[in-house]
Length: 182
Image (tube, rainbow, N blue to C red; front, side, top):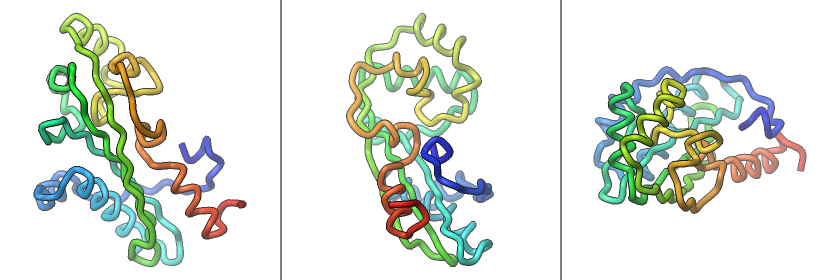
């Protein structure tokens, strides 16, 4: 997304233990957990690169009953996720945090509400035949910019949020900081 938007950046892996962080922060709402994980990533890198603006992001999917879905561990887990989402509405929370000199200086959390049509087992199997393992790293088991769009009968929210980051507010902050032309 950043490349397509013309944002200069250097990718760096934060190397945080997300599973441990999620366990430690288990009492947080899905919205607040996405925000905390994005901040954890951004601040960790910002302590290593003084003076740089560091963007961290994270996305979480929560079913209507509050169950959080993580990235699937294997194809069978992906099928379980898709069955759990079938015919329901879930929220996708995407957070972006910008840190500088080891502290968060800006943040945005956005929600998209995704209405999943009823999915039959035959569809799920064909879908996973086509999309696995490409969706292995995707929370919610879909790439909305590809065949994953077939899972939905309605989508509310920003396309960029669904892709994994509230991009328009990020761009606005970068213009405010004069990183991007106004």
